[in-house]
Image (cartoon, rainbow, N blue to C red; front, side):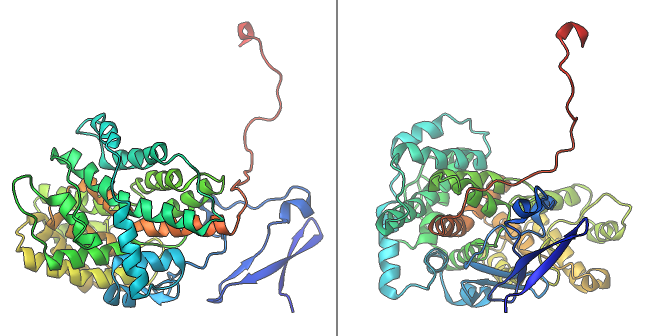
Length: 428
C-alpha cells in the first residue's frame, strides 16, 4: 500500500506520495504541488528540509554520527582503503579489484600532463592571488584545451573525462600553491602513489631531492578520504545544479570550487587557524577563551568545535585526531599555535559545558592542525579540501547526468513592489 501525506489549503485536501530511502529516510514527494494546487509552493531557506534529489552515493546521519560511502563506513574506508580506491568507489559504485585499481591509477597518470599553455594563464595571476581563485580559473580553463563535450551515454567518454580531471587536478592544485609561494612549477613522478606524488609536486625544493614520509602520506591520504564526499552540501549541490543545465564536467567542478571557497563551507579549517593566531596575539590563554566561548553575550565563537550537521560527534574527527597526533610527533613541530590548539582540545574534552553539548573538535579543527604542521599556508587549506572533495563532485555530476535529472530551477516568493506606473525621469 502506497503511503501518502495530506496537505489541506483553504479547506481543500491534496495527497502526495511518501518516498522512503534504503536507510528509512522519509520524504514527501511534492513535485506536482504547484500544478495541482494552482500555484502553491513551499519555502525552505537554505533547503534544510528539502531533498533536492535521490542519490545512492553517501549516507549521512548527523544525529547518530554516521557517515557511509556507498554503504561502507567511513571508519573502515579510512583504515583499510586508500584515496584512489575510495574515489573509484564513490564514482563507479563498487570498490575496485586489484586490476581495476591498477588500470585506474595508470589511466590517471596517463592524463596527468597539463598543456604548457596553462602556464601562460597561471603567469597572468599576481603572486598575491588567492590559490582558490587560481585553482577555480585553471579548472575552468581546462575546457579550452578539451573543448569537445562529453557524451554521457558513452561509458568510454565519461571514463576518459573522469581520469583526465583526476590526473590534472592535483597538478593544478600544486601549481596554485607554488605560484603563491614563489616556487618553480614541479611536475609529478609517475613512480609514486597518487598522494605521495601530489606531496612531491607541492613541496620539492629546486635543489633538493624529494624524500617521501610515510606518516605524512598516510595522514593526507586519510584526510582526502574523509573529505571525499558529504552528501548534499553547498558545493556538491552547486556541482549538481550547474551540471543539470548539461554543463560539462570541468565547468561544473569549477563552480563547486567557488562554492567551497566560502568561509561557511570549505574555509572552516582556515578559520580555525586564524582563531588560534588571534588567541596567540592576545597572550595564548586558552582558559580565558573557553570561558568567552561559554558566554552567550560574548561575540567570540570557538571555531572547529561542533558541526552544523553532526548533532552527536563528527565521526571523521575521531579518525583524523590519531593522524594529527602522529604527524606532530613525527615532525617534532614546536609551534605555539599548535600548542594552543592542543590546549583548547584538552579543555573541551574535559569541560562538562562542551561535553554535555557534544561540542567536540571536528574534522576542520584537526585538518587545520595537520596542514599547519606541514607548513601549508592557510590560503591553501581550501584547495586541499577541494582535492579531497573532487571524487564526490565527480560522482554526483555523473549520477545526476546518468539519471537525466531535470534542470534545477527553484521557485521563490516575491516580496517586492506590486504593479506601479512608470514615471518619466523629470517626475522622479
